[in-house]
Length: 475
Image (tube, rainbow, N blue to C red; front, side):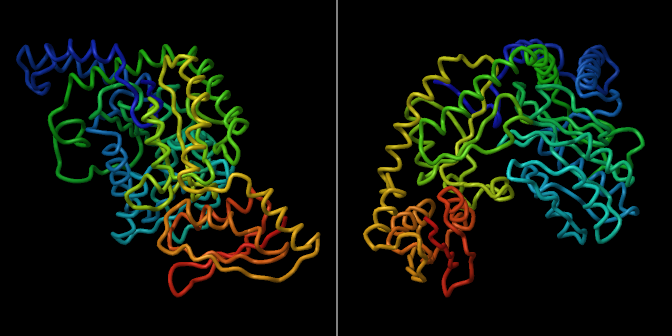
């Protein structure tokens, strides 16, 4: 069964398995003890730290192992904010950071600090100079800025080196979440703090890393502990750490050749999916991106149903669609980009993915999407239906002010958009359709539908229940 969700968690690398088994026999003792077994465990831990530091691009005494990538982000942000509390209480993050960063930002704000989100373009990338502007316009002195090296949902690489230079000029440290990119190489630029997560590159889960450059003011958050420089309390899981670092080195050796091959396979998906399936939007930067990841959204598709159907067909993929979330809200990444969220599919290929698996995926995907659309009653040819209706009413090219109200209250994505598509041909060119909806995804998907269909999104306003979205027919 092809596994296409490496961005969530990569399969355990064979080198990690071998290293883990070997380290279980040698690394079980307390590395803080002076007897033989403790010294042996300390040697393993020190060797792993040196190898990890070399891969990250820092000094061994700047690197700490944590219990997860999320823990590394929380500790890194909290420690830098606490260490620089006298410098300021302001935090700058991008709008598409991992939820762990946004949760840490929310906790900081709840504690009396301030937070600014740097916007991104439709490809999910921050603009050059955006961090300099955010620091310049801050309500007070900034303690810390954070920027991911590459986005976990759409694969877009961020201009870390440029942002780091802008932060350095302002005297503000930059924390980089490198969880998605470390397998493909070290992060360039003058970053101050960096985090990673082993299960993203084929290591065991439960191992993260936090690098803090010398000279960065940092105060460990929580009770003090003598282990890991006081930054990660608790007994080190040495076998898992050894396996994580061994797999990182192995993956790095393979990634140069694999990057080119996987990029070609992903380019094949990016190019052919819109040709095979109507009404699909491929999102993310087409060039400045991770080589193994592609995300696209299918109009008139329920994301959860689509993922279940693909799973039944033998493919494991992920989604940022609100239809697959217990919160029923669209992905914050897709929302920040302003792109279609319904029917969202993220394909992230593990190292060694065979070409035939990708071809088989491309072969079955159109029928799966067609079947899901049919189950939801989606219009197959809504553009032609709208044109026929215009001809029947004699609208020609003249605009007429007419309005139709569609009540989609209580209905989840993609039903409000489907109902809009079904009735757009019932009003003449220039006429208005108002969609009443209380599903949060409609705020993103109705404007995206208008852009795809060439209609005018007039705007939204509060209604007695939910929100009223107004669309003017233009074709």
